[in-house]
Image (cartoon, rainbow, N blue to C red; front, side):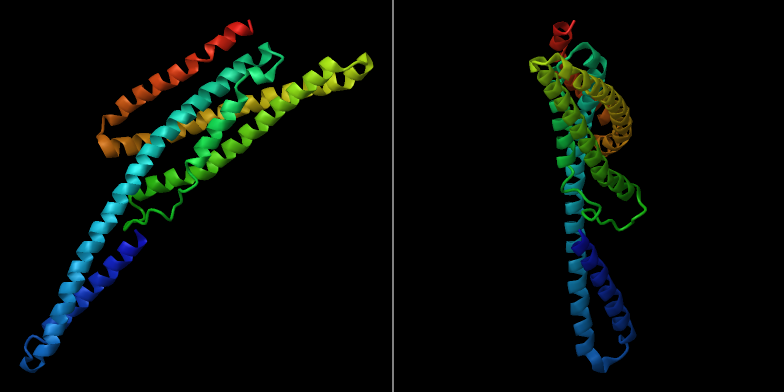
Length: 256
């Protein structure tokens, strides 16, 4: 898009300069060759302007289409991540085995949200008007790359704490000397408290980010498919999230 925009500006400048030169030399009959040269340059520049505009808007439409699809899929992943973190928060106190709680799935979803943004940057979309609504929304869309990276790193840290708790629980179970259980038991209790605090804050953070990201997804869906398109997409996303979360109701009965 940057190349097409630069081509447009250069060719447009040539059109203006050549047109002015032609008009200034219109009364001079002895410079017909110069006039023909200006005419040729102007014609070529006009054609180049049209081609540059067509290429620019074509690339823009492709980027907007990609942003729309990516925003919808990412929003659904964030909704699932929000529900899973809330699910983990409500069930973490009912089991001694952290592997029964889907921390691995939480980490994978956070990684997927970040991976979807690896190729996104502010430099992809180069608008004519940098302060326009579409330009601003695309900058907001692209800026979530760092936010999703942060979410992924936090999810990884939580998964690591859960893994450490399971390892220490198994070590205590196989310890032959009861005197050796005092220190690990205290450390294990501290790790569980830490995990509870981390997952609680993470759930709050993911919920806030999901609400913010909904505005971006709504904008692109409505722009692409009409003003009422988001309502239908939102219902479909809600149905898909509910279906995914229904698979975890089995865990609730197994820990009761």
